[in-house]
Image (cartoon, rainbow, N blue to C red; front, top):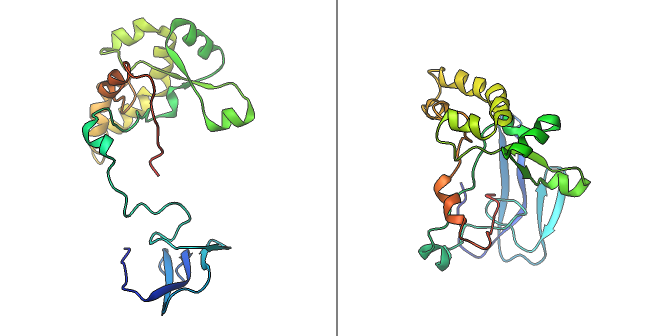
Length: 203
């Protein structure tokens, strides 16, 4: 839990995370406080490395501190704002001959991954049947993509849906197993009239 302390004070040599020396299998953060203003760059330890920084945020990491971030005015009035879609299973990805047949049938789309861009390898492809409202419609759009998802995705969802210890989300997904877990259909339809899309990482 982050807590703001009154000035004058300065953090001295905080450690972002380290194993607890006792019997408990946990990691802890360590912060030493001393009175007075900091007179030099602060030292932040991440793993075995020590970093010199101008300011140490409450989360004890190098990335930006968003604790005082505010909602952008444009986001208050613009309803075209949503989390991205989630496939929920790597079984939606295709490669090889199945990928080529699925692309010819219009049942797959390219996925540009960072690794693909850096190495120059061909983009991976993924089955894309979120607009198919029924299993029959999904099969009719691309028999190759449908057969691929039925083999790679459906058994996993069926197994999870039958587990009483898991949430009802798996049962709901099993009713439309040929679709991604979170297709965000309404959001995608809104994007059809947009000329560009800004994507931000969650973390």
